[in-house]
Amino acid sequence: MSDSLSDALAALEAEVRAACAAARDDNELRQTAARYLGVSGTLTRLLKRIPELPGPERKPFGQRVNAAKVAAEACVAQAHARLRAEARERELARPAADVTLPGRRRKVGRRHPIQRVLEEVVDTFVGLGFDVAEGPEAELSVNNFDRLGFPADHPAMDMHDSFFVADLDAAARVLLRTHTSTVQVREMLSHPPPVRVVAPGAVYRRDDDVTHSPMFFQLEGLLVDEGVTLSQLRGVLEAFLGRLLGEGVKTRFRASYFPFVEPGAELDVGCLLCRGEDASCRVCKGTGWLEILGCGMVDPVVFSNVGYDPERYTGFAFGMGIDRLAMLRYRVPDIRLLYENDPRFLASV
Ligand code: FA5
Image (cartoon, rainbow, N blue to C red):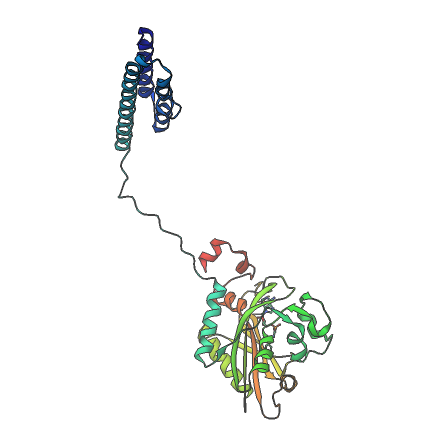
């Protein structure tokens, strides 16, 4: 082997050593190794040229390049060990974790105040012997109005300014239900008397102010049997309100009109925000009272519409605003707070 070739290989070895010593991380070292020892690395290419050499030159050349290859591999292994040691040093030099620091408390959510009141109300009625029923939020207009005794285009429908979904012909017209009284119709159409159910759920109206939300929650109650009386309705509602808001709660019934009950009434609860002492209270508008439900004895017309015998059965029904109960229960001064989802408000109730 010529001296010049031998010098060139010695220079290559020196180059490999320098490159390995200069590698600052695993990635750089991997690139260096590939440059000399990879499939098309300098040393690999030299070894592949052995067959091109004249016979007598092959062995000494092969031995010399192999020695350079072994030396290069040793350099790479050494550099690898050096990098591992450096990494360990760095790790040990890092300040230790302070295990005495107090932990960070996880923020745990909780049920929305409307949901809490709704569950409590349902539980109370279940405790009084009522079953729980459900109905769809997108409802046939027939169930929302007609079967409940609203004559076509009756002005009482204006109080339920409605969101229509499909304005088809009258029989198939669909809207977002404006009250849960639709479930009365569905229950009576699907079950013979006696019936004793409550039906909670979302309802929708084109309303928006301190005590009116466009989407809100109601709970409907319906009890039908032989010999049901108005005084039983009053007893059930007063027992319920005493349990929910405390025995001292003030209530008053006012005669009112709903096409599906006769007689009909509304029930107000004494304002628990101002206790009737603030003429500028926005919740009770200075009256000292907040309306929370409509109720009455089921109109015989409704019984006829669902195939019940109005001569044999009587019943009472009520529909209460769950949001209003949540306002009283948690002293919420504006119904919209219940829907804005401000975490500061939600954490305070
Ligand atoms: C009704 O919806 C009748 N279906 C109730 C009923 C059922 C009467 C059975 C007779 C027999 P009314 O529109 O008054 O009635 O609503 C009932 C209650 O829902 C109100 O007393 C009030 O508490 C609540 N409410 C009504 N509109 C809103 C609104 N936009 N936002 C929040 N609560 C409301």
